[in-house]
Length: 162
Image (cartoon, rainbow, N blue to C red):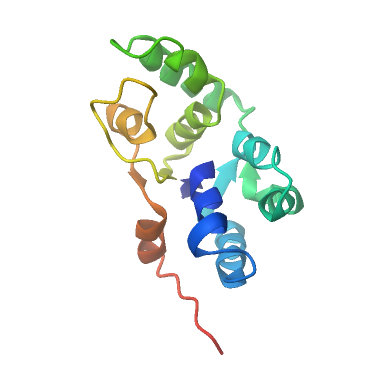
């Protein structure tokens, strides 16, 4: 199972898999979701639907792509993620609060409960002090992570014209 960060969907829409340029990518996401290989979470949907664009519409129209975080296991793992963040030394003032109010800690918590791999475009940076980085926390919690392109290769995605 793979869980997608909002930045992977936003970057795909804005750059390399625009919805009108490569609709096959968006169809592929939904097909992978139907076979339980790929999903995201409710807080990512919330972030996406704050916008007023085709990605916001896609998120609204494909709500089954986004898993709930209300289960007890995810709630308990969120506490574990929040505790780790609270114990971090040398971070910029407000970094913890900013991180905890977004989707990222929930994404990691859901991955912990499901054994999923987090898919993000964030890159490991152990020197980061301004904000918490998903790969840094994933490594500390033994949660696997990869980027979109690694995911596409891993799942043997193919977008072939007829």
